[in-house]
Image (cartoon, rainbow, N blue to C red; front, top):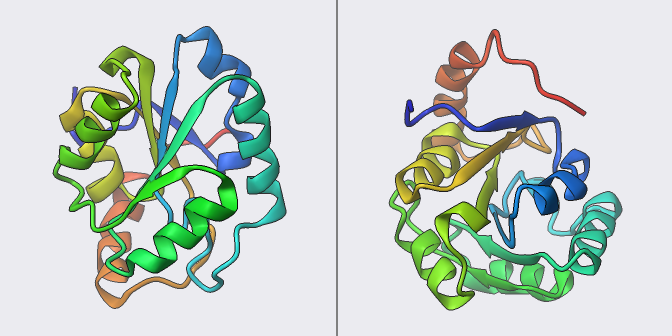
Amino acid sequence: MSLIKATHYVSAVEYISIEDLVQQGIKLVLLDRDNTCVPRDTKMVPPEVSAWFEKAHAAGLTLCLISNNIHLNEVQRSAHELGIEGEGFACKPLPRALTAAMKRFSATKEQTVMVGDQIFTDVIAGNLAGVSTILVKPQSNEDLWYTNIIRHVERRILKNVTFTS
């Protein structure tokens, strides 16, 4: 498998089928924070993402934020708002934070999925950890300057990819 290829491509977190995750035996959902669960141009979790988290909890899924954000207070605030745990400064694409979360929540690779909006951090980290990956579109056009550069490369890679909704 290519390190830059996601298992699934979905338009946004709220369109990820919780039923499909449960049927696939997924127990642990690791999610990126910035532009995956929280738009970069705001600090608040959108209502549709919060609703998805509530449904996922009700279905018995364990959820955890895995973010490269170095502002740990922002990561923890979002995690608290969503009623889950969160880890900042994850250093993705290194898989360390993902494997630590799997150990903490007693989940196997087969029971875990990584959800994020970036190929070169989230997807590669998930693939290196040996878990399924879901790439979503960024929630906002606002990004850090270096992420904007990487987005140009990602657009070329994704030009023939269809995202489901």
